[in-house]
Image 1 (tube, rainbow, N blue to C red):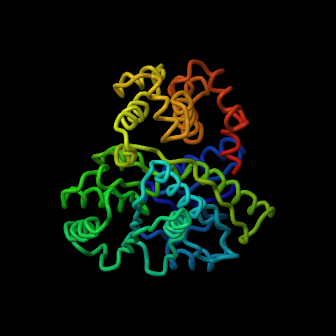
Image 2 (image 1 turned 180 degrees about the vertical axis):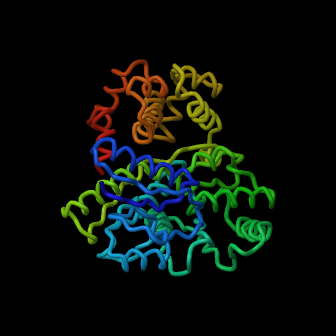
Image 3 (image 1 turned 90 degrees about the horizontal axis):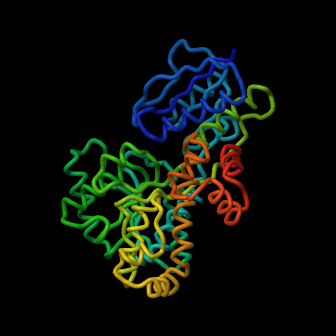
Length: 384
């Protein structure tokens, strides 16, 4: 039996999802690993416990001390963080941070924003190379838009909370409105929302806030609820375990790098704003977001928007270049993808939760739009 230690924070949705993914791999591959796992906080320094002597490590290698522990011990390790410690020696399995930044940019561009900003974190060390924020800004610049950057300089974790909020609030006031803001993590996103309240700015009508990581608990406790990038934690955990297993069997080494594509944005109230010139269209989109799981039709959208079906179709065609019926289907399909990626629910249950008339209808939509069945999609996500 292999002894493997998992050094990942368990206090966040990202960390707990990662652990679930590791467990799913062990269930499927039948490997008899003895896994050492302790509760960990997000900002807790991670180290290999003294006296532990095992065969492999899966860790969020986010500090030099932990990286040196691993290198000194000569233990095979898979790093699941965006920090690149021990390149060529410590293997990596992470979410594609640059594609994640581009995904966030596309999300906001589809909402017709023209003002954009990015907020880094004062919790990150000064040497951290923020490829995520850079990719977001570069994608927007390539589309012809400026991205205002807050590097968190002048802020530190040691500052009182209210002082951090005040500084962020002052920055928010300088931004052109309405502004679409991407934050590096949920902690920073929640601070931005509090800062907006502090200086009297509405969220999302003045500033929209999107978190660069997934944490269902953090979103649920935030008002308005926090939109987040679904960072495929279970897929990363699954593939990290697979990579470590290959290393332990001599089929890979520390030079291996596996990147997982981001899934999608989970929209909640903090980005519930589409910069469109017609409020009827905005009302229809909000109604769809809140009711896609019900058996709604295009006529329901039109009734909620206070217009005729024909006029609503014209508005969708003019400003969104899509029909209302296609939009309903795409919203349901996006939620189905999330559930396939993040849960073990049966296909029939997912179809019902997403508003499809039957599993067969959902299967036809998957094959038509992404050329694979729901089951094939689920397997492809785990195989990334």
